[in-house]
Length: 159
Length: 159
DNA sequence: TTGTAAATAAGAATGATTACGATTTATAAT
DNA sequence: ATTATAAATCGTAATCATTCTTATTTACAA
Ligand SMILES: [Mn+2]
Ligand SMILES: [Mn+2]
Ligand SMILES: [Zn+2]
Ligand SMILES: [Zn+2]
Image (cartoon, rainbow over all chains, first blue to last red; front, side):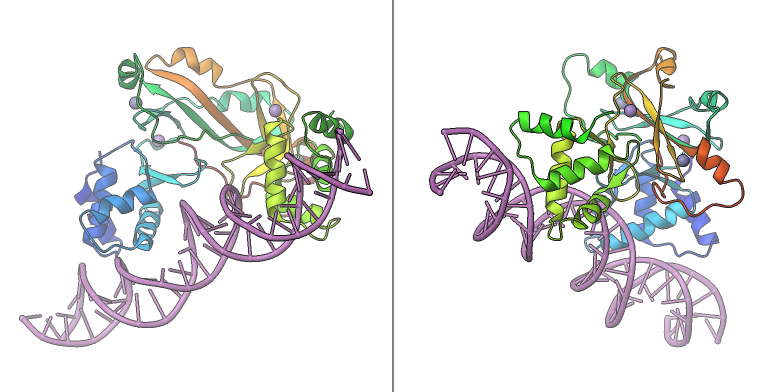
Protein backbone atom coordinates (compact mmCIF):
# COMPACT_ATOMS: atom_id res chain seq x y z
CA UNK A 1 0.00 0.00 0.00
CA UNK A 2 1.67 3.18 -1.15
CA UNK A 3 0.89 6.29 0.84
CA UNK A 4 0.75 9.87 -0.41
CA UNK A 5 3.68 11.16 1.61
CA UNK A 6 5.91 8.37 0.39
CA UNK A 7 5.08 9.07 -3.25
CA UNK A 8 5.67 12.81 -2.88
CA UNK A 9 8.99 12.16 -1.13
CA UNK A 10 9.99 9.95 -4.02
CA UNK A 11 9.12 12.67 -6.53
CA UNK A 12 10.96 15.32 -4.56
CA UNK A 13 14.02 13.07 -4.35
CA UNK A 14 13.91 12.89 -8.15
CA UNK A 15 14.03 16.67 -8.34
CA UNK A 16 10.38 17.49 -8.82
CA UNK A 17 8.58 20.14 -6.85
CA UNK A 18 5.88 19.36 -4.37
CA UNK A 19 2.73 21.28 -5.23
CA UNK A 20 -0.73 21.08 -3.76
CA UNK A 21 -2.24 20.03 -7.04
CA UNK A 22 0.20 17.17 -7.37
CA UNK A 23 -0.60 16.12 -3.84
CA UNK A 24 -4.29 16.11 -4.63
CA UNK A 25 -3.86 14.02 -7.77
CA UNK A 26 -1.62 11.50 -6.04
CA UNK A 27 -4.06 11.28 -3.14
CA UNK A 28 -6.97 10.55 -5.47
CA UNK A 29 -5.18 7.49 -6.86
CA UNK A 30 -3.68 6.30 -3.59
CA UNK A 31 -6.99 6.57 -1.76
CA UNK A 32 -8.82 4.53 -4.40
CA UNK A 33 -6.64 1.57 -5.32
CA UNK A 34 -7.96 -0.49 -8.23
CA UNK A 35 -10.32 2.29 -9.27
CA UNK A 36 -9.87 3.89 -12.68
CA UNK A 37 -10.22 7.59 -13.49
CA UNK A 38 -10.27 9.54 -16.73
CA UNK A 39 -8.33 12.77 -17.11
CA UNK A 40 -11.66 14.59 -16.85
CA UNK A 41 -12.44 12.73 -13.61
CA UNK A 42 -9.13 13.86 -12.15
CA UNK A 43 -9.70 17.41 -13.37
CA UNK A 44 -13.15 17.62 -11.79
CA UNK A 45 -11.88 16.24 -8.50
CA UNK A 46 -8.92 18.60 -8.17
CA UNK A 47 -10.98 21.56 -9.37
CA UNK A 48 -13.21 21.18 -6.31
CA UNK A 49 -10.32 22.21 -4.08
CA UNK A 50 -8.31 24.39 -6.49
CA UNK A 51 -10.77 26.62 -8.34
CA UNK A 52 -8.30 27.56 -11.05
CA UNK A 53 -6.80 24.55 -12.71
CA UNK A 54 -5.68 23.83 -16.24
CA UNK A 55 -6.46 20.55 -17.92
CA UNK A 56 -2.92 20.67 -19.17
CA UNK A 57 -1.69 20.43 -15.59
CA UNK A 58 -3.69 17.27 -15.12
CA UNK A 59 -2.27 15.69 -18.25
CA UNK A 60 1.27 16.72 -17.36
CA UNK A 61 0.94 15.33 -13.87
CA UNK A 62 -0.52 12.08 -15.15
CA UNK A 63 2.43 11.80 -17.53
CA UNK A 64 4.83 12.41 -14.65
CA UNK A 65 3.16 9.76 -12.50
CA UNK A 66 3.21 7.33 -15.42
CA UNK A 67 6.93 7.81 -15.95
CA UNK A 68 7.56 7.03 -12.29
CA UNK A 69 5.29 3.99 -12.43
CA UNK A 70 3.03 5.44 -9.77
CA UNK A 71 -0.01 5.04 -12.01
CA UNK A 72 -0.86 2.93 -15.08
CA UNK A 73 -2.66 4.01 -18.23
CA UNK A 74 -5.44 1.86 -19.68
CA UNK A 75 -5.86 2.49 -23.38
CA UNK A 76 -8.34 0.66 -25.51
CA UNK A 77 -11.35 1.86 -23.58
CA UNK A 78 -14.03 3.67 -25.53
CA UNK A 79 -12.97 7.28 -26.06
CA UNK A 80 -10.84 8.57 -23.20
CA UNK A 81 -7.89 6.84 -21.55
CA UNK A 82 -8.27 5.80 -17.95
CA UNK A 83 -5.67 5.71 -15.18
CA UNK A 84 -5.29 3.83 -11.92
CA UNK A 85 -2.78 3.39 -9.12
CA UNK A 86 -0.05 1.02 -10.29
CA UNK A 87 -0.35 -2.30 -8.54
CA UNK A 88 2.62 -3.63 -6.60
CA UNK A 89 2.82 -6.97 -8.44
CA UNK A 90 6.19 -6.96 -10.21
CA UNK A 91 5.75 -9.93 -12.54
CA UNK A 92 3.63 -10.22 -15.67
CA UNK A 93 -0.08 -10.50 -14.92
CA UNK A 94 -3.53 -9.30 -15.96
CA UNK A 95 -6.69 -7.96 -14.32
CA UNK A 96 -10.40 -8.46 -14.24
CA UNK A 97 -12.54 -5.31 -14.19
CA UNK A 98 -15.89 -5.08 -12.46
CA UNK A 99 -18.54 -3.52 -14.66
CA UNK A 100 -20.46 -2.19 -11.68
CA UNK A 101 -17.91 -0.74 -9.24
CA UNK A 102 -15.13 -0.24 -11.79
CA UNK A 103 -12.47 -1.90 -9.67
CA UNK A 104 -9.52 -3.72 -11.23
CA UNK A 105 -8.56 -6.99 -9.54
CA UNK A 106 -5.24 -8.64 -10.46
CA UNK A 107 -5.21 -12.27 -11.52
CA UNK A 108 -2.05 -14.27 -11.23
CA UNK A 109 -2.20 -16.51 -14.26
CA UNK A 110 -1.49 -15.51 -17.83
CA UNK A 111 -3.76 -17.45 -20.19
CA UNK A 112 -1.53 -16.63 -23.15
CA UNK A 113 1.62 -18.29 -21.85
CA UNK A 114 0.12 -21.76 -22.35
CA UNK A 115 -0.57 -20.97 -25.99
CA UNK A 116 2.93 -19.81 -26.83
CA UNK A 117 4.44 -23.27 -27.24
CA UNK A 118 1.44 -24.63 -29.13
CA UNK A 119 1.60 -21.86 -31.72
CA UNK A 120 4.15 -23.22 -34.12
CA UNK A 121 3.69 -20.90 -37.07
CA UNK A 122 3.43 -17.63 -35.17
CA UNK A 123 5.93 -15.92 -32.87
CA UNK A 124 4.09 -14.16 -30.08
CA UNK A 125 5.93 -11.05 -28.91
CA UNK A 126 3.19 -9.18 -27.05
CA UNK A 127 -0.37 -9.54 -25.93
CA UNK A 128 -3.16 -7.91 -23.96
CA UNK A 129 -6.08 -9.45 -22.12
CA UNK A 130 -9.18 -7.60 -20.95
CA UNK A 131 -11.73 -9.39 -18.80
CA UNK A 132 -14.98 -7.76 -17.70
CA UNK A 133 -17.63 -9.00 -15.31
CA UNK A 134 -18.86 -8.63 -11.74
CA UNK A 135 -16.88 -8.97 -8.54
CA UNK A 136 -18.25 -10.88 -5.56
CA UNK A 137 -19.69 -7.92 -3.61
CA UNK A 138 -21.25 -6.39 -6.71
CA UNK A 139 -22.67 -9.72 -7.80
CA UNK A 140 -24.61 -10.01 -4.57
CA UNK A 141 -25.92 -6.46 -4.72
CA UNK A 142 -26.84 -7.12 -8.32
CA UNK A 143 -29.20 -9.89 -7.30
CA UNK A 144 -32.27 -8.05 -8.57
CA UNK A 145 -31.64 -5.21 -10.95
CA UNK A 146 -28.68 -2.84 -10.85
CA UNK A 147 -27.87 0.73 -11.64
CA UNK A 148 -26.28 1.44 -15.00
CA UNK A 149 -22.64 0.67 -15.59
CA UNK A 150 -20.34 3.66 -15.20
CA UNK A 151 -16.81 2.80 -16.29
CA UNK A 152 -15.77 0.89 -19.36
CA UNK A 153 -19.20 1.23 -20.85
CA UNK A 154 -17.98 0.38 -24.35
CA UNK A 155 -16.33 -2.98 -24.76
CA UNK A 156 -13.19 -3.27 -26.80
CA UNK A 157 -13.16 -5.41 -29.91
CA UNK A 158 -9.91 -7.26 -30.21
CA UNK A 159 -7.82 -7.95 -33.30
CA UNK B 1 -14.56 -16.25 -49.54
CA UNK B 2 -17.02 -13.43 -50.06
CA UNK B 3 -16.90 -11.71 -53.42
CA UNK B 4 -17.72 -8.12 -54.21
CA UNK B 5 -20.77 -8.84 -56.37
CA UNK B 6 -22.30 -10.99 -53.70
CA UNK B 7 -21.89 -8.33 -51.03
CA UNK B 8 -23.36 -5.60 -53.23
CA UNK B 9 -26.30 -7.83 -54.13
CA UNK B 10 -26.91 -8.36 -50.44
CA UNK B 11 -26.88 -4.64 -49.78
CA UNK B 12 -29.20 -3.94 -52.69
CA UNK B 13 -31.59 -6.60 -51.44
CA UNK B 14 -31.66 -4.76 -48.13
CA UNK B 15 -32.75 -1.58 -49.93
CA UNK B 16 -29.44 0.23 -50.24
CA UNK B 17 -28.25 1.84 -53.44
CA UNK B 18 -25.29 0.53 -55.34
CA UNK B 19 -22.77 3.31 -55.84
CA UNK B 20 -19.29 3.20 -57.29
CA UNK B 21 -17.76 4.40 -54.07
CA UNK B 22 -19.43 1.65 -52.11
CA UNK B 23 -18.19 -0.87 -54.65
CA UNK B 24 -14.66 0.43 -54.27
CA UNK B 25 -14.73 0.24 -50.48
CA UNK B 26 -16.17 -3.26 -50.47
CA UNK B 27 -13.59 -4.36 -53.01
CA UNK B 28 -10.75 -3.04 -50.90
CA UNK B 29 -11.78 -5.24 -47.98
CA UNK B 30 -12.74 -8.29 -50.01
CA UNK B 31 -9.50 -8.22 -51.99
CA UNK B 32 -7.37 -8.05 -48.82
CA UNK B 33 -8.79 -10.53 -46.33
CA UNK B 34 -7.16 -10.37 -42.90
CA UNK B 35 -5.66 -6.97 -43.65
CA UNK B 36 -6.71 -4.00 -41.52
CA UNK B 37 -7.34 -0.47 -42.77
CA UNK B 38 -7.98 2.82 -41.03
CA UNK B 39 -10.68 5.20 -42.23
CA UNK B 40 -7.89 7.34 -43.66
CA UNK B 41 -6.47 4.32 -45.51
CA UNK B 42 -9.85 3.68 -47.08
CA UNK B 43 -10.25 7.35 -47.94
CA UNK B 44 -6.89 7.54 -49.67
CA UNK B 45 -7.56 4.38 -51.65
CA UNK B 46 -10.99 5.43 -52.93
CA UNK B 47 -9.81 8.97 -53.61
CA UNK B 48 -7.40 7.62 -56.22
CA UNK B 49 -10.33 6.60 -58.40
CA UNK B 50 -12.94 9.16 -57.28
CA UNK B 51 -11.22 12.55 -57.08
CA UNK B 52 -14.02 14.13 -55.07
CA UNK B 53 -14.78 12.15 -51.97
CA UNK B 54 -15.84 13.13 -48.51
CA UNK B 55 -14.37 11.48 -45.45
CA UNK B 56 -17.89 11.38 -44.11
CA UNK B 57 -18.86 9.07 -46.96
CA UNK B 58 -16.13 6.69 -45.89
CA UNK B 59 -17.31 6.71 -42.28
CA UNK B 60 -20.94 6.25 -43.31
CA UNK B 61 -20.07 3.36 -45.59
CA UNK B 62 -17.93 1.71 -42.90
CA UNK B 63 -20.85 2.01 -40.51
CA UNK B 64 -23.15 0.41 -43.09
CA UNK B 65 -20.75 -2.47 -43.67
CA UNK B 66 -20.38 -2.94 -39.93
CA UNK B 67 -24.12 -3.19 -39.43
CA UNK B 68 -24.32 -5.87 -42.09
CA UNK B 69 -21.37 -7.74 -40.56
CA UNK B 70 -19.38 -7.41 -43.75
CA UNK B 71 -16.48 -5.82 -41.90
CA UNK B 72 -15.31 -5.75 -38.28
CA UNK B 73 -14.04 -2.78 -36.29
CA UNK B 74 -10.91 -3.10 -34.16
CA UNK B 75 -10.91 -0.56 -31.37
CA UNK B 76 -8.20 -0.35 -28.81
CA UNK B 77 -5.48 0.31 -31.33
CA UNK B 78 -3.43 3.46 -30.84
CA UNK B 79 -5.31 6.47 -32.15
CA UNK B 80 -7.55 5.54 -35.07
CA UNK B 81 -9.89 2.56 -35.33
CA UNK B 82 -9.04 -0.10 -37.90
CA UNK B 83 -11.36 -2.24 -40.00
CA UNK B 84 -11.06 -5.58 -41.77
CA UNK B 85 -13.21 -8.01 -43.73
CA UNK B 86 -15.34 -10.01 -41.29
CA UNK B 87 -14.06 -13.56 -41.09
CA UNK B 88 -16.49 -16.38 -41.81
CA UNK B 89 -15.94 -18.21 -38.52
CA UNK B 90 -19.30 -18.12 -36.76
CA UNK B 91 -18.27 -19.23 -33.29
CA UNK B 92 -16.36 -17.32 -30.65
CA UNK B 93 -12.68 -17.01 -31.42
CA UNK B 94 -9.70 -14.64 -31.42
CA UNK B 95 -6.87 -13.61 -33.73
CA UNK B 96 -3.16 -13.11 -33.83
CA UNK B 97 -1.89 -10.04 -35.67
CA UNK B 98 1.40 -9.91 -37.53
CA UNK B 99 3.42 -6.82 -36.67
CA UNK B 100 5.14 -6.83 -40.05
CA UNK B 101 2.47 -7.56 -42.70
CA UNK B 102 -0.50 -6.52 -40.57
CA UNK B 103 -2.52 -9.65 -41.32
CA UNK B 104 -5.00 -11.04 -38.81
CA UNK B 105 -4.99 -14.83 -38.45
CA UNK B 106 -7.84 -16.53 -36.57
CA UNK B 107 -7.03 -18.94 -33.78
CA UNK B 108 -9.53 -21.53 -32.75
CA UNK B 109 -9.03 -21.69 -29.02
CA UNK B 110 -10.23 -19.21 -26.45
CA UNK B 111 -7.71 -18.98 -23.59
CA UNK B 112 -10.30 -17.32 -21.35
CA UNK B 113 -12.83 -20.16 -21.35
CA UNK B 114 -10.56 -22.33 -19.22
CA UNK B 115 -10.35 -19.61 -16.58
CA UNK B 116 -14.08 -19.09 -16.24
CA UNK B 117 -14.71 -22.09 -13.98
CA UNK B 118 -11.61 -21.46 -11.87
CA UNK B 119 -12.66 -17.88 -11.12
CA UNK B 120 -14.97 -18.39 -8.19
CA UNK B 121 -15.33 -14.84 -6.93
CA UNK B 122 -15.76 -13.11 -10.28
CA UNK B 123 -18.42 -13.54 -12.95
CA UNK B 124 -16.87 -13.09 -16.38
CA UNK B 125 -19.34 -11.64 -18.86
CA UNK B 126 -17.04 -10.41 -21.62
CA UNK B 127 -13.40 -10.38 -22.63
CA UNK B 128 -10.98 -9.39 -25.34
CA UNK B 129 -7.64 -10.87 -26.31
CA UNK B 130 -5.03 -9.20 -28.49
CA UNK B 131 -1.96 -11.14 -29.57
CA UNK B 132 0.84 -9.58 -31.60
CA UNK B 133 3.86 -11.18 -33.19
CA UNK B 134 5.20 -12.44 -36.50
CA UNK B 135 3.60 -14.89 -38.90
CA UNK B 136 5.61 -17.66 -40.55
CA UNK B 137 6.37 -15.90 -43.87
CA UNK B 138 7.28 -12.65 -42.14
CA UNK B 139 9.42 -14.42 -39.57
CA UNK B 140 11.56 -15.88 -42.31
CA UNK B 141 11.94 -12.59 -44.16
CA UNK B 142 12.73 -10.99 -40.81
CA UNK B 143 15.79 -13.21 -40.39
CA UNK B 144 18.21 -10.31 -40.50
CA UNK B 145 16.74 -6.90 -39.93
CA UNK B 146 13.30 -5.74 -41.05
CA UNK B 147 11.58 -2.59 -42.20
CA UNK B 148 9.63 -0.66 -39.60
CA UNK B 149 6.28 -1.90 -38.40
CA UNK B 150 3.32 -0.26 -40.09
CA UNK B 151 0.06 -1.28 -38.44
CA UNK B 152 -0.68 -1.46 -34.75
CA UNK B 153 2.45 0.44 -33.92
CA UNK B 154 1.31 1.27 -30.39
CA UNK B 155 0.50 -1.64 -28.15
CA UNK B 156 -2.59 -1.54 -26.02
CA UNK B 157 -2.31 -1.70 -22.27
CA UNK B 158 -5.01 -3.88 -20.84
CA UNK B 159 -7.13 -3.38 -17.72
C1' DT C 1 -38.33 10.42 -68.52
C1' DT C 2 -39.30 11.80 -64.15
C1' DG C 3 -40.14 11.76 -59.08
C1' DT C 4 -38.31 10.55 -54.78
C1' DA C 5 -35.68 9.09 -51.12
C1' DA C 6 -31.04 7.90 -50.46
C1' DA C 7 -26.34 9.28 -50.92
C1' DT C 8 -22.92 12.67 -51.11
C1' DA C 9 -19.91 16.92 -50.54
C1' DA C 10 -18.24 20.54 -48.07
C1' DG C 11 -17.40 22.29 -44.12
C1' DA C 12 -18.52 23.14 -39.24
C1' DA C 13 -18.73 21.00 -34.64
C1' DT C 14 -17.15 17.89 -31.16
C1' DG C 15 -14.17 15.75 -27.70
C1' DA C 16 -9.74 14.09 -26.19
C1' DT C 17 -5.19 15.33 -26.14
C1' DT C 18 -1.08 18.20 -26.96
C1' DA C 19 1.55 22.50 -27.70
C1' DC C 20 2.88 27.32 -26.62
C1' DG C 21 4.03 31.83 -24.66
C1' DA C 22 3.36 34.37 -20.59
C1' DT C 23 2.98 34.29 -15.65
C1' DT C 24 3.36 32.33 -11.11
C1' DT C 25 5.60 29.60 -7.56
C1' DA C 26 8.52 26.06 -4.91
C1' DT C 27 12.87 25.70 -3.43
C1' DA C 28 17.60 26.46 -2.53
C1' DA C 29 21.19 29.82 -1.86
C1' DT C 30 22.15 34.13 -0.09
C1' DA D 1 13.68 36.79 5.38
C1' DT D 2 15.05 37.96 0.58
C1' DT D 3 16.04 36.72 -3.75
C1' DA D 4 17.28 34.13 -7.93
C1' DT D 5 16.11 30.48 -10.84
C1' DA D 6 14.18 26.77 -12.97
C1' DA D 7 10.01 24.28 -12.63
C1' DA D 8 5.12 24.45 -12.70
C1' DT D 9 0.98 26.38 -14.10
C1' DC D 10 -2.55 29.03 -16.72
C1' DG D 11 -5.13 30.26 -20.57
C1' DT D 12 -5.71 29.37 -24.92
C1' DA D 13 -4.79 27.69 -29.48
C1' DA D 14 -3.71 23.64 -32.28
C1' DT D 15 -4.31 18.88 -33.60
C1' DC D 16 -6.52 14.63 -34.85
C1' DA D 17 -10.24 11.33 -35.31
C1' DT D 18 -14.91 11.28 -35.69
C1' DT D 19 -19.68 13.11 -36.10
C1' DC D 20 -23.11 16.43 -37.53
C1' DT D 21 -25.60 19.80 -40.74
C1' DT D 22 -27.39 21.43 -44.83
C1' DA D 23 -27.63 21.94 -49.56
C1' DT D 24 -26.97 19.35 -53.69
C1' DT D 25 -26.58 15.27 -56.48
C1' DT D 26 -27.80 10.63 -57.87
C1' DA D 27 -29.60 5.68 -58.15
C1' DC D 28 -33.42 3.52 -59.44
C1' DA D 29 -38.18 2.38 -59.66
C1' DA D 30 -42.45 3.80 -61.75
MN1 LIG E 1 -1.43 -5.22 -11.92
MN1 LIG F 1 -12.47 -13.92 -36.80
ZN1 LIG G 1 -17.48 -4.71 -8.25
ZN1 LIG H 1 3.10 -11.39 -41.44
